[in-house]
Image (cartoon, rainbow, N blue to C red; front, side, top):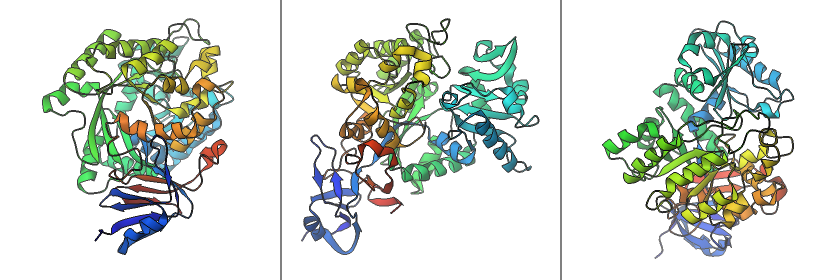
Length: 514
C-alpha cells in the first residue's frame, strides 16, 4: 500500500523549471520531499485522512526563490529603522529621518537616528544627502543615512565630530577643506561598526527580515556576513526550529584564518544553515565612483575608481582559501576589477568545480564574459540593478554610452556562464528583479522569462552546491515552493505586479497570502 502524502497541491500550473521546463497540475509532498508529480487525479490518490489538501485554483507553483546575494540584517534594518528607499526626493528622505527621530525620542531607545536605502540618482536633486540636510534632522543626536549600496553614507555634524579622526581623508568628501558629511568605503565601515547591532538586536532584525523574505516567495538566502552576530542567530534559530529560510553563510575574508583553524569548510552545516563561501572585495560602487574602471568616469574625468582590496592581496586570499577547500565569492563591479578577479580565479586548479563566484559583474567586457563560460565561474548578479540602466539613469550618468555594456545577462548565458540572481537587498524582491531582466530594452541584457526564473531558482541553487536538492520541482527534491497568483509567462510585461500567494519551505507553508 502506498504511504499517504503529508500535503498535496492540486489544480495548479506547476513549472518544474527543468530543461526543458515541464508543467503538471499537482504535486505531493511527504516528510518535506516531493514524492509525486502529475495530474490532480493521479496525485489525489496520495491524499489520506490526515493529508492537507491545498487547492491552488489555477495558481502557478515554482521552485522556491533563492536570493544568492543578500544581507538579511540590512533587510531587517529597512523594516526597523527609517526606510529611505521609497523617498521620491531629498526632502522625502529627510522627512522619513525626522519621523524616525520622533519615534525614538525617549531614553530607553537607541540614541542614533538611522536610515537605509536612499538612491539620489532617482531624485530631481541628484545629489547625496549631506551634513546640513542631516543637521536639520537633529543637531544633538547622531544621524546616519546609508545609501542603498552601503558604499556611501551621509552623516550629520555630531557624527563627524565624534568619528572623523578615525577616517582616512580620501574617504571623507570635502568642500573648501570642510567635510561635507558624505563618506565612502572605509569611512562608511567606521560608522557601520559604531552602529552594529548586538546579538539581541540582530535576532530582532533577522526575524523581521525572514518574515518579509517569505512574503516575497524567498525560501533560501546566501547571506554576506561580516563582523555580525548573524551566524550565531541563525544557528540558534535552527536549533529552536524557528528558521523558515535555508541560509548559506558567506563569511568575510577577515575570518579566513579562523575558518581554516576551526576546520569549517564550504557546505558544512545542517539542512537549514550551511557554510558558504569566503567573501572578498576588489572595488567599490558606481554610486560612489569607486568601482574600478579601465577608463575614467563619464561625469568625472579625473576619477577611474579605487581598489578596496589590491590585486596582489586578492590573489593571496584566493590562493589561501582555494587551497583550504573553501569557495570564493568576490565583489567586482568595474571592468578592471572583474578582469583582476578572473585572473586570480584562473590561477586556481579548478575554479568551475569550486564554483568560485564574482558578485555583481556590472561592467564586464566581452572577453571577460567569454572567460566566465570557459572557467565555469559563477556570475552572481542582481537584475534589480537594471533600474539604473535606463536612459537618464545612474549608469548613463557615470558611464555615458557604456551603460548598454552593463549587466549583459544574455551574453553571459550565451557564453555558458553559470548565472545566479540575487538582490543585494536593493530591494529584496525576486519578482522585481525578474521583471527587469525580462523587460529591459537592450538585447544583450534581456533574458526570457524561463531563463530569468531559473537564475533565481536553479542558478542560485547551483551557486550554493544545492542543485541536487533545490532549484527545480522534481521527485526526490526538497519541497521548497513559491506560489504566484498569476503566470509570469502570460503577464511578462507586468511581472513586478504579480503577487506571491504562498511560500512553502520543507513542505510547510510559511506564508499564506491567498
